[in-house]
Length: 101
Image: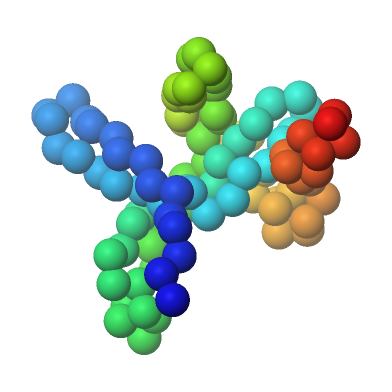
């Protein structure tokens, strides 16, 4: 069964494209963050691979109604957010939206 993936394409200073997959969103101290990893097209085939994928945490900043920007966070905040993710002590972004309705 095909799952719809939340993919984001970034371009570095040299014009190289990097596609990342959003694994999860979380809210922390009134801001929204995204947990991203390298996108692997054939993820099922790579499950047997011992190679670990890089993981990134970025702040999600709304630009307008239909667009958002992903901004890297500093290492100290990233470490704090990873610890929070590991302990599941974060606000669920989507629960907050449901409560407002």
